[in-house]
Amino acid sequence: MSKIGFSKAGNKKTVMALAVVAMFLATMGVTNVQAESPVSLSTEKTTFDIMEGGEVFVTITIASQDTRYKKMDLYLTATWPGGTAWDTTFLDDNYDDLGNNQVTLQKGSSDTVILRIICNDDCDNGDQNEVEVTGRSDPKWYDADRGSECTGSSDCTTDTTAASASSNTTNTLEIILNARTGYSHTVGGCELNDEGTVNVYQGQTNSWAYTLTNTGWNTNNYAFVATVESDSGASVDGWTVNTGLVDGKELTGVDTSLTGSSEIGSSIQVTPAATTVPGTYTIELVVSGNLGGAPDNCKFDVIVPAPDLEIKDTDIDFSHTSAWINTRGDSQKVTIYATVRNNGGNVDTIGTKTNDVTVKFYADSAPIGTAQTVSLNYGEEETISVDWNPGRAHTADEVGLVITVKVDPAADIEESDETNNEGSQFFKVVRTSSSNPSFFMGFFALIGSVAVAVMLSSYYRNKDSEE
Image 1 (cartoon, helix red, strand yellow):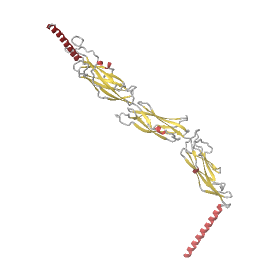
Image 2 (cartoon, rainbow, N blue to C red):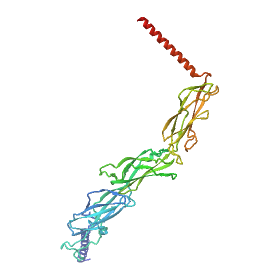
Image 3 (spheres, rainbow, N blue to C red):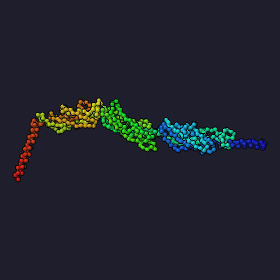
Image 4 (spheres, rainbow, N blue to C red):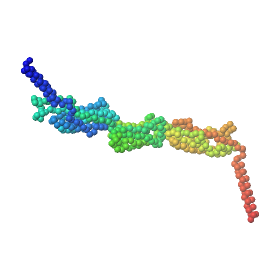
């Protein structure tokens, strides 16, 4: 090869190499696909409380530091590092849907977009989630000499890469979301009374404490309804059930920015009707939030007992420890006392009340006097008495005469315990001689009077002689 031929070939290779280098440099200057985006994202708040089923709006400021290009597209993305994605939508500052999640920025300008986040089915009270917001920017290229937008002419190069495919990423905004229940409450405490037998009685008021707690995030006010039902279907007419708190009671939520109490204690007051028959009754308090939230209740059973009339052996007493009777049949008068009580309710299962209870006294199984009546409501007791003259003396084989007192002897009232309606005691009656004891007593009294008269007479005679 001649020097001239070699020279031409070398020149061609040199030109080609320079062209490749120029094209590479040109490419480096115009694509910008690997550089950090000149756009930044910011927000004034990065932690939000979001209600179950509710939504929050995060305002994001977009700022462009680019001064080369008239326009720049920014594609926004929201990702969930934890894997649980809640519904998100990018909106413009008019709260309209931002088409294709993309915003166009002017040279060196800023803009505002809004990220709407919805607490959906995978969002429950107590959950915490994180969303990351980033942007991918891509400019529309312009001819460097004229500063006008490229139209595909030979003296400029147009970048056709979409912003969504760009690797020019902005900084990442990390937004923390705490799922809350806006409105919820609990009613507790009164059910602790339902641990077995809880007795209530006709006409008597009983109280059961409870606590109302606003467990929701927001302030709420409440309505209260208390009801009573019979497990056997008995009438509950005339019962009084007071809720303790009046409708409209307000409690703050657990949001620490709120002031006031989120909990209050009160009590249910229950008064059974005077005609209530024995049985089990269910008391229920239902509290509803007027602003939202599922109602909650406090429920427990009470028992209205049947009557339980009682007299024990030790409830019988006497005016004397013993008495006498002579052979003519005259006897010493003795007063018998008996205390009777009601340990149960005031009405039996068929509606018979305990305000007219019969009490009878017996000696040697024979009635003493006439039947007496007493009124015995729950917890009441009454002592009654009868005068008795013994009709015989007890024998040597007897401890004494049997004195018996019976409450409701004809079983007119249905009771929970029919075995404690009778009490007995032994009373000693001794036989005296045929003389009338009253004669001897009068005789001894006469002798005493005479003795006193003699002493007085002797005293005054001695006094007169001394003078």
